[in-house]
Length: 247
Ligand code: F6R
Image (tube, rainbow, N blue to C red):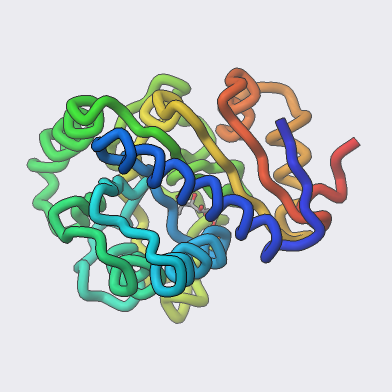
């Protein structure tokens, strides 16, 4: 299903409310909430609202376990552009989540250790009973996570090569496309699909044409987000601009 909000702020508040309801429900059951998280511009307001709920409403993240979708490779966690830094600045430094509950793909691994790390990442999620909720953005290539065109629908966590358009879109953060890593470690499409609930966020006119393809286009590996059409546990949460090309 597709839900369109007047603006990003209203949409993000409603997503944050759903996340907090899930966390509280799990707390009442005495178990952990297992969340799949995204970086980038799209979820920033959701995280801001969750931080506000923590500070003003006492929402606790003590029982929350998180798995981020992806990290550039190679990437030092302390680098300004790392997704570790992004998550710390936008969420983790401002809430009470235990450090050991946070999982982000490791951009510092030697190449020969990546495959084992990725398998372990999948196993950890599985052992915890799977992701309760996965938050996604969408790239202009149609990527979800860093599953670029050509990714298999049953793909798992792995090292991938970034699309040229993706690197161009990231060039501002890195001060030029040539400084953007060519690779990343990402959860696969198969990994994402195992989540019990998936919410894809998209805002602004810049996303309107890829949203049209993702929601209404032919299902194809050339636009990986079209695979989401297969699943009824997926919800597209859009602002009016991102939804403006939908029929
Ligand atoms: C980020 C991720 C990417 C982004 C996508 C959109 O962890 O996996 O798929 O969600 O590139 O990025 P923004 O939100 O910056 O437009």
